[in-house]
Image 1 (tube, rainbow, N blue to C red):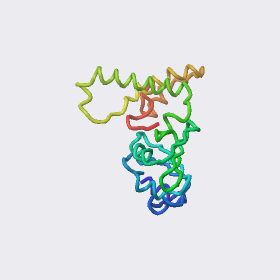
Image 2 (image 1 turned 90 degrees about the horizontal axis):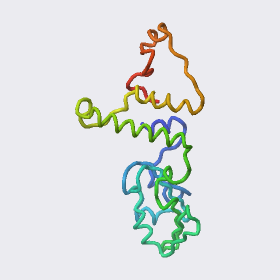
Image 3 (image 1 turned 60 degrees about the horizontal axis):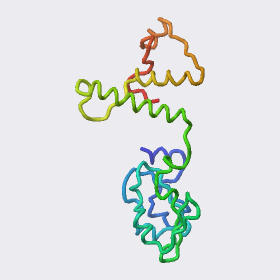
Image 4 (image 1 turned 135 degrees about the vertical axis):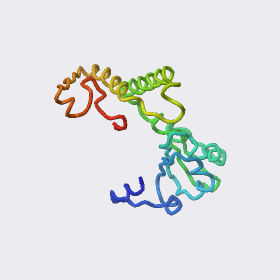
Length: 186
């Protein structure tokens, strides 16, 4: 589906094999393993930059690539510059770690939201695990999700207008929330 969406937006969707020797950068975001190994490294254009945008470090065989190198330049703490036996240079951003976790600082409000959601989810599971949850993937109940958002709105001095009885009935929701259905994605 993602490839179809990208194609519909006018971008060309190609296999990695067909462009690996001509691109200046490869952004790994497959959520898979062993996408870039020694075989692929040898095909890269010199000075190609490898960027891991996935959620784990297994998309490239970082250790094998580093061990293959005859020179490792760490003068830039964010970009590892490796010289391969073929004298080709390959650059790896953040030692192959996912860039989301190391490249920039998220605002404190985002950390607070993430931590709050995690804490509330753990409490929900520990309180109701046997009654409501029996293995699998579940969404945080909207009532809890909206409560966390409401608490954080106070940081911005935001206030919400209460629904009238007519508005509540029209929308088919309680005046006290949740205001979205259980499968609504924010």
